Amino acid sequence: MNSKRIITLARRVVRQIAHDRRTVALVILAPMLMLTLGAILFRLEPARIPLGVVNEDEGVSLPGAGALAAGQRIVDALTASDAFTVTLLQGSEIETRLRAGTVEGVVVLPRDFSAALLRAPDRRAEIDLRLEGSNPTRSRQITARVTEAAMQTLASLAAGSAPGQATSLPITVATTYLYTNESMDAFDFIAPMYIRITSACAVNTSVSSTAASSARSAAWRSPWPRCVASAWVTSSWLRRWPTSGS
Image 1 (tube, rainbow, N blue to C red):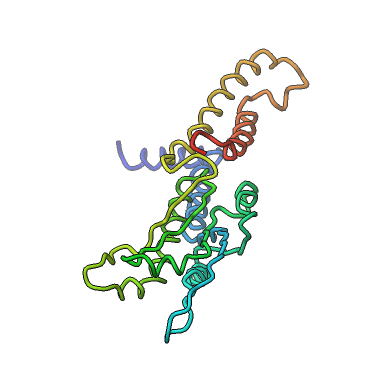
Image 2 (tube, rainbow, N blue to C red; image 1 turned 120 degrees about the vertical axis):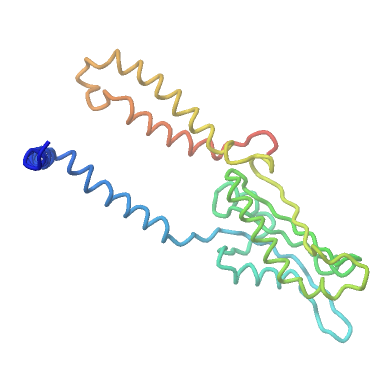
């Protein structure tokens, strides 16, 4: 094949592509759209997690050293963190706020938190963390961030322990879940949505095949709009449904 035939063939292919708007859109607009979405996703700043705090710690008085309010120090560290938007709550608001979704976790510091910290031989503090629990990835993130903030706050107390005492982990986070439990993983979170999509598409396909001749159902003749709509509604509802272990 000589060069003249190659050029002629190339011109014909270019003319065909230029007259096919769908191909032009696929070749030019689709990569631009994907690059734009990728740039938005990679440059997106992570949203702050709404976290509630119930601080009932009364603190303790130390001879010659003033007062020690370990609970307030932890609250200050969580407030200063760029991962949380901290809201001070009362103990009676915990379950209501978690069910409403206004907070995704609640840190509870009891009245004797500082006193118990000083009484413990290894200076180990236990923090009560209540989690909404429907999103396992977010639950693990909250637990890790709360543990990190508390450990940094109480590091000086752990370093001041007497020789021979354990100082590796001055914090124990006891988590309880409003929905599900700690064994839930990401697959448990997304599986109900995929099951609902599959069943909805199967049912809607059979219904659409029998109603395709109806003029009133012309706008919904394809099953896919209904599949997407029903899947979105169902997945939103399933996130709030308590499972075993709640």
